[in-house]
Amino acid sequence: MSRTSVYAIRVNGRLREVEASDPRMPLLWILRDRLRLTGTKYGCGVGICGACTVLDRGRAVRACQVPVSDAVRGSYTTIEGLSHNGDASPCQRAWIEEDVAQCGYCQPGMILETVALLERSPRPDDREIEEALGSHVCRCGTFARIRRAVRRAGALALGVSK
Image 1 (cartoon, rainbow, N blue to C red):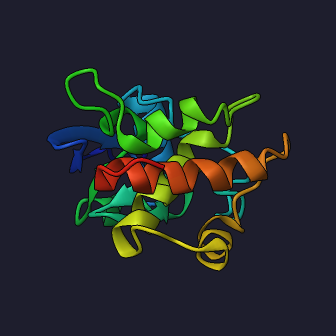
Image 2: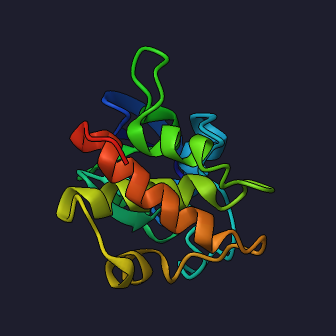
């Protein structure tokens, strides 16, 4: 018989209590199934494709690789937590302005990875962008638009025109 435990996890600035019977349950399933934050996507389940990327204190992590028992030590931001008072973040605005998404499945993870990149490097060059986003799988192939959106997001965050 499995015993259910309660875990307190900080998500989008709020401490949330969630139940899980297995301490190895991935944060991805906690976010999607327990907290109904479905912007974080399931892709490969092994941390390769980037669809489940979230931020842990500003650092991009793959939610499918973080067990709930370890998640209690983090502070996570999902795509739903980027906007404030209904206003899109600079990265979200740039994605819209550059018309990046086709199917959109991979985009939440890429946007969150971009937020982390811009924290490290507000004006990234092509190498930095490729290094940060190169492991994210996008079957639509909108990489040229993604690169433009990353640059636009940096400019928006800095308050300068593109």
